[in-house]
Every structure is written in C-alpha cells, then in structure tokens.
Amino acid sequence: MEAMPHQLMGYDRAITLFSPDGRLLQVEYAKKTVKQGSTAIGFSCKDGVLLVTDKRIVDKLVVADAVEKIFQIDEHVISTASGILSDARVLIERAQMKAQQHRITYDGPVDSLSIVKDIANLKQICTQSGGLRPFGVSLLIAGIDEDGPKLFETDPTGIFFQYNATVIGEGEAEVEKILHKKYKKSLTIEQCLTLAIKALSKLLGKDFSVDRVDAAYVETENPKLVKVDNERIQKLHKKVNGK
Image 1 (spheres, helix red, strand yellow):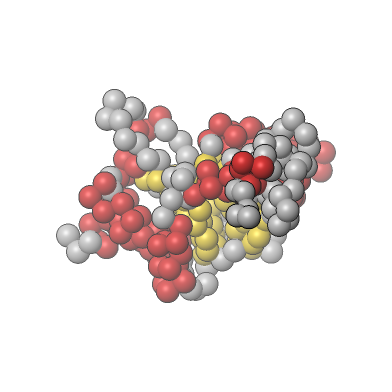
Image 2 (cartoon, helix red, strand yellow; image 1 turned 60 degrees about the vertical axis):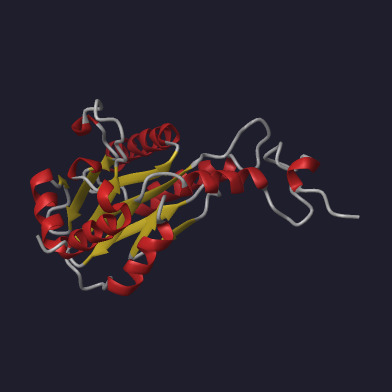
C-alpha cells in the first residue's frame, strides 16, 4: 500500500504533533516562508558589522525612503529580517525593550548574545505550545560587544548560530556561494558593502535599484548605527558593474 502524504494524515495541522519520521511540519513550513522573503546579508567585518537587505519595493507608488528593513535594537546592536515582517516587528520591539531594561538595571550596554538568546527562546516556545504558530521569520542580529564584532542568525525553530557572514531569504543559495568564495575576515565594512552590492546586483539583475537596498553598519571604534545613503550605494553599484 502506498504511504499517504503527511498533510493527508493531518500531521501538519498542529504545532505539537510530530510526523512518524520525527518532523514538525508547521515549523518546516515557517522555514519555507523565510526562504520566500526578501534577501538579507550580514557581515562581521575587520572594523565592525554590516547588514544589507533588499527592501523588495515593487510598487512605484510606495515611498521607498519610508520602508525600513534594518532596525536598531540598541546603539551598538542592529537587526534585519526575512519572512513575515510583522512577526519580526514583535521580536524587534521585545529586543529593544530588553536592551533598555539592561541599561537601566546595569547602567551599561547589553551584549548581543543576550538579545539573541531571548529571541531564540521565545521562538522555541512557539514550536511546542498548543494554539500557537511558529514565528515565520529569521533574524540577523549584528552588534559590537566588548570582545569585538558579532553576527548571529536565528531561524523559526529557535536555533541560533554565530557567523562571520551569512544570508537569509530569497536567493540564499546563490548569495551563499559568493560569500564562500569572496568573504575573508580581513575585509573592511567598505569592502563587505561592495561585496553585498555585487551579490544583490547579480541576484536581482535588471530589477536591481538603489531604492530597493537598505544598508547600515556599526563600527568597532564608534559603536553607533550608520545608515548607508543612496548616493554611496549608487557609486558602488556602478563600480562593481564597471560603469
């Protein structure tokens, strides 16, 4: 007798129900949602951390400058997301509150790992509690800690990893190949920004537009958020395309 698909057996209807081969299908669906989200790239650089993301603006009537895909959690910690951005907003606001509480309580900046663990713990709870659904979003969290630049990725399962460079969202496999080939720990923020623009340009092709790109970094020497303006992105785009 031919085996019935998991969906027909109902194993994907409840988050707490394991399929016979040990899978939580609702969590896997959430991870697929992330893969359909807009591309986001993160770097731990020689002189700081950098996040670059595609805002994926497809409607000309949308005010591009009003769309933000990179969020400030604290002065020295930034984040971006891929997947359901409304889910991301809830997690980001929680992280911002935790950072503020830490400053009030300890009179100092929170470390990036504490922020990451808090977000990952909430995500994990939503994979084993009836009546909930997993967060359909992955986050890149980058910050400057006492021991240097840090870059983390959390996915819908509640797992997190620290990376030197990573990518989430649409075109993940293609951009990952470029990162494996071109990224080095010795690269500066400017060099990583050039690499990210090159990767997005290759991925988006004719659809690439300066208005679609959101980029920000935090330097080790001056740990404060710096937004990359459109003029700078335009120059780098011309440079990588030999124009």
